[in-house]
Image 1: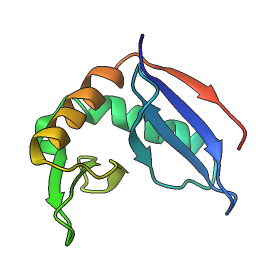
Image 2: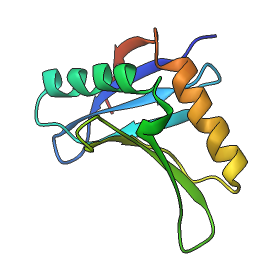
Image 3: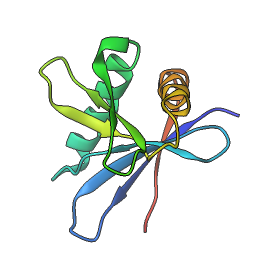
Image 4: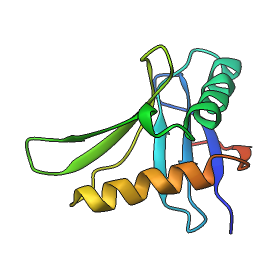
Length: 111
């Protein structure tokens, strides 16, 4: 199974995307956008930047959990991950984003 991008409108009225792996687990959540076209551009930015390892940053939070962010060339955050128990699991999450973002379909959903 391949991954997919889901586009939805949040409670604040902003458009957001999330990338799901083939097992339906959310592996990347995007920032909020005022328009659907802005959200679509965010997805294209994920596709463009995910292949570049230097665009990912892994951080450990105060609870000892690991998260990653994906940034564009200008340093702006495109998306972030869930929290992971180990740095190794977090790096596997990055690999999953790199694999699933390339040709995943975009699906609009209502929440």
